[in-house]
Length: 260
Ligand SMILES: [Zn+2]
Image (tube, rainbow, N blue to C red; front, side, top):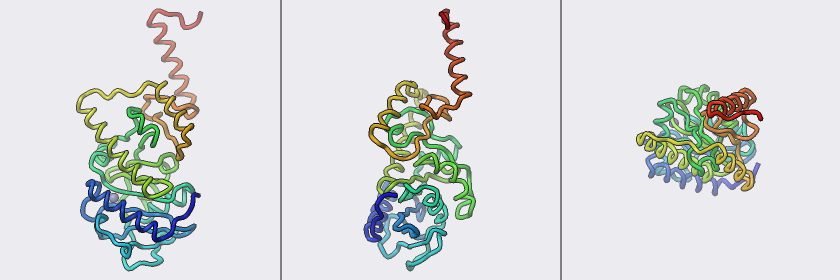
């Protein structure tokens, strides 16, 4: 786990990010929530029933790892369990952001994960953006629904709901939210143009290497599920066999000998 920040620093960062989410239209009314891990067993979270664009330090709430309020005049976000579950599962995560940015949320509503390898920046910073199954807001279904995806990605869609991002600090988690929404917006427009052309496998592999050189942390899910590219050793055997067979068939069709 990286360095813990003070409650004061964490509070300032949450308020800053809340304002930016609100100003960019990532949340409406009282939607969205942000949290920061401030010690081994304490998390500072945004309150329920309040716009995230207009919070003061005194509006934030401290909870324990079960999501129970420890201090604060307001009540914690109704999605507090989703936040603490991410901290429980990932030691490297110290901040969580959740919002409903329109383009990415539209993909979540359509049930389409953002997994195509189309933008180098996204592959470098996020890998791909999987889709978590639907869970009724504020119930145990939500933390359960994120368990699989949070282990393999720093950013993911919540089906028929919105987006969740995690990071080593709150600005890092928020920046991933911006990247996801930008990615969704561009994907949508490219789809309208009728030509979404994924990057070639070799190009994706170069980006994966670059990512390792740069020491970018966080799980790298790759774009395997979309079937557009391979990602090093995360390619499973059956897929690899299929790829080889496809190559051989292609070579034969082109009139070349596969073996000579
Ligand atoms: Zn929400």
